Amino acid sequence: MMCRRARCGTASLGTIIGIAAVILVSLSAAGCDWLFGAEPEAYVAGYYGSGSSDSVACYWEGSTRQDLPSNGFAAEAWGISFIGDTVLVAGTYKNALAQHVASMWKDGVRTDLPAPVTSDDTRAVGAFGYGSDAYIAGFYYNNSLGRFVACYWKNGIATSLAAPGMDFAKADAIAVDGSTVRVVGFHAATNEKACIWTDGTRANLPVPVTATKSRAYAIHVSGGHVYVAGYHSDGSVKTACVWSDGVRTDLSSGTDGSAGGVFHADGTTYVAGYLKDASVAVASLWSGASHAFLSAISGKLSGTSGVAVFEDSVYVSGFYGNASDIAVPCYWLDGVRADLPTAGGLAGFATAVAAR
Image 1 (cartoon, helix red, strand yellow):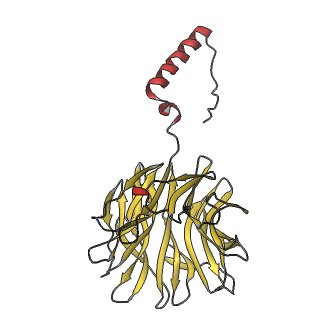
Image 2 (image 1 turned 180 degrees about the vertical axis):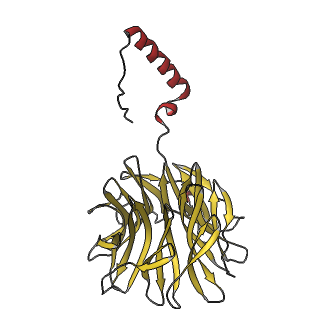
Image 3 (image 1 turned 120 degrees about the vertical axis):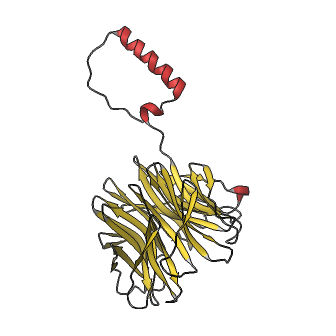
């Protein structure tokens, strides 16, 4: 880490040497966090297990794993953010009736998120901390209507998001800027349509006239501009794309791709996703218009789930298949992969990333 020079007066050589000695003793005794601040750390949400019936929700702080309580039931964590110093995680567990229950964890303490109507299936997918408030994106099954309804929770209180007609809808990610709440996801009667809700008002995201399906998975707001990542498909090929203030830019062409994370920093839009290479999906990062495959085992499946930028470093969450075709959760820091530990080396997935 670099220091900036400050304007100062002159001092004698003896005074300077004395000050330097005091500083060196202080650094040796207490480390240098008090002077420079702690080193940046990746926080990665995910889960691991031998199958969906015994999965364990967790998050990793650097390489240290924190399992999240779920009453002993199978659980998965899908989103991560911060409320001040508190780590906020969104996810879902299955109860004794095998019903999905939306939850959020604050520093490991779980709170279940209720639907506003009778529901036997609620899901929490995205997390966003703003001020002292916890925002969680997800959806619930309306038992009386017989369909899924997109929603978000603010501090545990649900707000439903309208879809046209009898369409079902699901929300995947949320961002808050001032008093404006934006949620992205999709609605569908048969074919899925990527959309964004701004303070509850839905707008479909533009796709080519040939598109039969589209999804929006991630959102980032920076400098008053709104960035959304996802894909559209003509029924045969998926095309990774990013929408900037509603204007779509395709990131892939002619081969399957999809985008699941977006972050805009210092004039560059970073998009995490995958692109097929020789028929195998490979974890990918787009930096503006530049594409790069992320390090994994050649010929094995890999993918990404999120991206964050902090202090000029780019963090990407995801997974790759090892030589035994077991999924290994990981994150990439400026393109260098760091594997994340699971109990007993079980398969796992990293589903979201934040950094501070």
